[in-house]
Amino acid sequence: QNRRKFSSPASLLSPPLPPPSTQVQQPRRFSNVGITARKFSQTLGWGSKAGVELTAEIVDQGRALCAQYIRSRLKRTGIFSKKCGLQRLRSAASLPGGFVVRQVLPELISIGAELERLHPKVYTGVGRQISSLPGGAASSEKALTSALTCVSKELTKGQVTWARIVSLFAVAGGLAVDCVRSGHPEYIYSIVEAMARSIEDDLATWIGENGGWPGLCSYCKPPSTEISLSSFVGLLGALVAAAFLIVLILRWFGRFAI
Image (cartoon, rainbow, N blue to C red; front, side):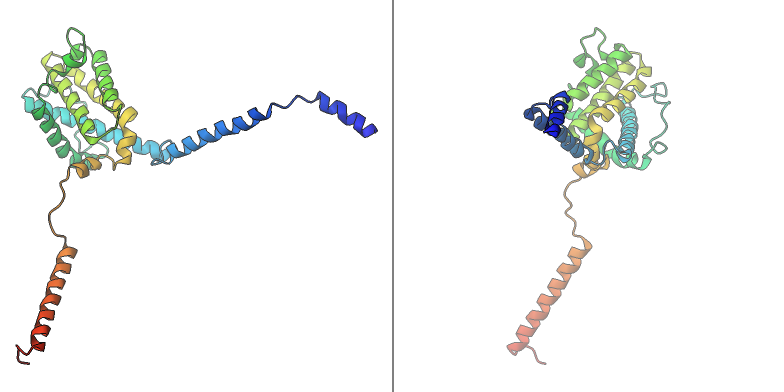
C-alpha cells in the first residue's frame, strides 16, 4: 500500500502527455520532409559537394556560351566592335569547360540563328517588348537584368526544354544588340552575368539531369543513317552464309559438278 501512495503523487507531478493524435502527426510531418529531401538530393547529388561543383561548372560554361553567342549575334547584325564590352571575358577555349563550350557553341549559334530568322519580330527590339520604360530594357543595367530575369522565369515556368533555353540565349543576344544601338555597349557584361544567374537559379538542375550542355548536341543531332561497322560485318556474314546455302542446294540437285 505504501508503494502505491508514493507512485500516485509522482505521476500527478509529471507533465501531462500530449494527446495521442499529436504524437502520431508529428513524425509524419518529419518523415514527409525527409522523403522529399532524399528525393531531391538523389538527383545528381544536388546539395552535396559534387552537386555544387557540377552546378558551378554548368554556370561557368553557360556564361561562356552566352558571351560567345552575343559576340556572334553582334557580328551577324554587323555592329560588333572591340568596344562592345566583351573584352573582360577570355576566349571560350581558356574558360573552364572550354572543350564543352567549343563543342556546343556551333549548335547553339545555328539553332539561335534559325530562331531569329523564323521569328525576326520576336528577337528584334527585344528591350522595348519586355519593358515599359521609355528607352526599353536597355535604358539601365538594373532594368536590363530585371527584364532578362523575368523572361527566364516565364520561359521556365512550365516544362523546361532545350528549345526554350536556346530562346533565352536569343533574347540575351537581342538585348545586347539593343544596348549597342542605344549607345551602352558596357551593359553587355551585365547581360552575361544576369544570364549566368538565371542558369544557376532556374536551369542548372535540368541541364545537369539532361546530359549537361552536350545534351543540346544530342537533342539536335538527326538520327544517323550510316551503317555501323558491326552491322556491316553482320550483313556481310549473312550474305556469305546465304550464298553458301544456295550453292549447297544447287549441288544437291546436281546442277554443279563436284
